Length: 473
Image 1 (cartoon, one colour):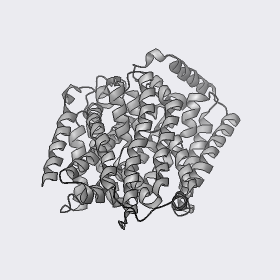
Image 2: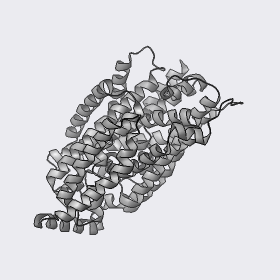
Image 3: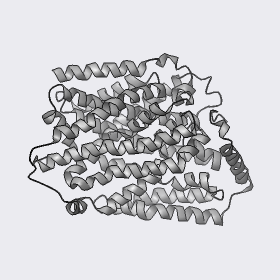
Image 4: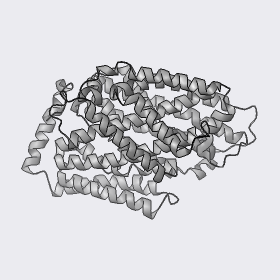
């Protein structure tokens, strides 16, 4: 009873803080991009909470049960991926100061490629959203065991909308800030309460590598590096930063914090394994710790933190999708004059689709989370080519994109999860995406119209004083 009271009390606090001053959100620009004025501390908090999501918490912590200390290599994946993001694109994204990641493709290669990129990213994010909802259902089912799982997912989606729908990105960042503060208390506590006086079982590094092969870890490193640079939920928050320096520092700091925060649950679940606790499904390890190892009162706090992670991650992804839909398929020339209602309606629609997909498509959390990255990885050449190589052409990007989508899908269907498809997709495939893009860009160089677009794009990127302007035309 005390846990339930604490859970709903803290939920009320987060709700009130999330909607605090949300009434000041009057325009679409404010609703989607928080007026592009986010300072370092809240930006770090929202980036960390964007990455700290229920799916990865469930999936990565379960690996601790299977791979022991070697499973810490999986949080390391994010450290490497986000450091790459920091130096490769963080400042450039803010200098571009677009409204969405897909808008880069419209500016550099043409509106048709921008729309294709937008569709690819939206499809991927629908997969992520469904995964996040299913993860929350798995974690919360023991706490609300009398509620049917489908109804539980529906209620959780409703809570997410209740907290963030009215204020958009402003409410999301506010909720992220308080969520970050309580998260840095919870995750070390998960490890603390999982410790035991004796550990009759151990998993050596070599044994862990047999269960979780190095090739799998390497493939995730490569995939994370070349998918996160195109992550719309990250890009949108980078666009909301005050300036380039803030964007650069925020991503760099969040990279180390994400690694540390995911490390604690991995070690905690390994402690369960070492203590001899038998789990039929390692995905339920976090729920086990909450329900069997947390003291009375703290369990409610733990579930609240996980809910906060789900709220901020889901709302951030839905907000990024709404921004892309309005930017690439709606009128944007007078965004500061539009009200926030369009964004709200689209967000509700996306939430409904995500809920339906979570009930019909998601089974294995981590596997489906990785699979959803296939469309994003196919955009890597076009994105980096736009920033770093003026000879990248529409033809080269098109061919690279088509091959990337084909190759990722082929690897999943042919090699499968058991066959280690991520290695063939990421380590083998991504270099080929770039080689193909380069070859076809040289064979079919930019046309006269493309050259004009390239010059306009480069001029925009040189003028860093424009970082507070919106991309309205």
